[in-house]
Image (cartoon, rainbow, N blue to C red):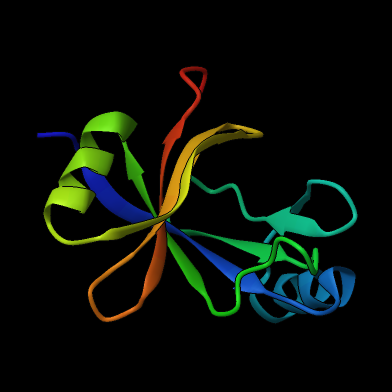
Amino acid sequence: MPSARLDYVELPVTDTAATKAFYEQAFGWDLAEFGPDYAATLTGDTDIGLSGDAAEKPAAPLPAIRTDDLEALLEQVIAAGGRLEKPIFAFPGGRRFEAVDPSGNRFAVYEPDEAE
């Protein structure tokens, strides 16, 4: 069975720079910028991402589950009754898919690039 653990939550934001500054000031976190509309902590623990791109940001917080076998976990999610929303795609740092559980909660599952 592939490993799976929650280690990332993506937050929808309306102002990436202001929200980044808030989290840095309020909690002392360092957030790396990935373009003008995305920033994230990179601690290796449970990280957060701030998604400000109107076309890409989630409607609600998006938990992301890390795995070491993306295709196997996709099969398990579908077999368990999950609904695929976005098929596997590449992003800076790895590949992921997005799905919805039987109660309508959206989540992402990702496999980081081997270099991580």
